[in-house]
Image 1 (cartoon, rainbow, N blue to C red):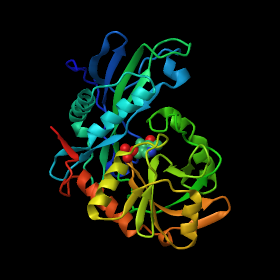
Image 2: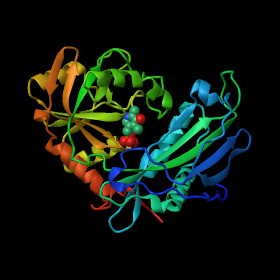
Image 3: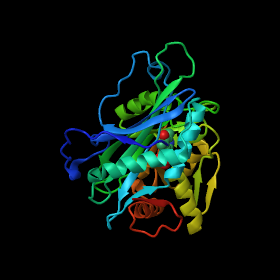
Image 4: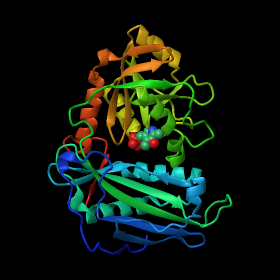
Length: 355
Ligand SMILES: *Cc1c(COP(=O)(O)O)cnc(C)c1O
């Protein structure tokens, strides 16, 4: 990557109250931008004041959704260090997503370099209260002005930062989940394994309708048979049945989560029986009815671990673990957050210090 050109903001914003950050409501003073032009490659990396991005109304992304993104965090450790969690996995995943959307890949070192420079430049914005962090949102989109469907000749890579609060200020609470048996999120051969806005666009209606019925999120079933469990909302999902943790395999329609991979590694390390296999909704509901469904949870960067307390499928409801956060769910949350915020030993080499 070329030298990053820095243009400081003329006026800095006041910092928000750290106890009221919520998620994704505040943005820092600066952002990273870099352009891509066919025949030249990525060029002109810059840190500029945070603000609107000039875009033609004919920009391809606005019409055909050629776009990808990532989600990660910079964690403030108690000893003052700033930590990233497995950033190379996000970098590689963005390459995979970009390849699927037929967009240029960003070299892993440039992706991480852009984040390092921006986060260090915005260091003052990293909150310090327990379990707060600086959320990092890198994204790439097609900018060419044209309304014919074709791969764009120009793209923009942007990174913005948002200080976020503790996800569970009152402790972890299980949520109610509606099993979605009509809408689907992704199909094999589609874009399910890519982190792209289109997958979210098609999911909003289902989540909104479940919300109106009192459910926090939907459990997605596979797009072919609506038979096998895939993901929960925008998280990967795991269930503990008869002492064994089951999660669906990454076979094309599921997003390969960094948290998912880390949970699988921890479970194997602890000797907890764990298997990646297809899990049908009938098997899951039956385990719930027979009292064999001990725990269930979603995994993702924003919430880390999100316990499931109830599942509703057609006219049946099952409760998991008496609608309480299960012991394994809690242990995974405590261990992962402990490693991420630098309180626990980083046995797996997952943490990268920014300096
Ligand atoms: C981002 C995302 C996840 C979780 O991935 P992490 O890397 O763990 O944050 C899971 N499912 C979907 C659909 C996602 O977009």
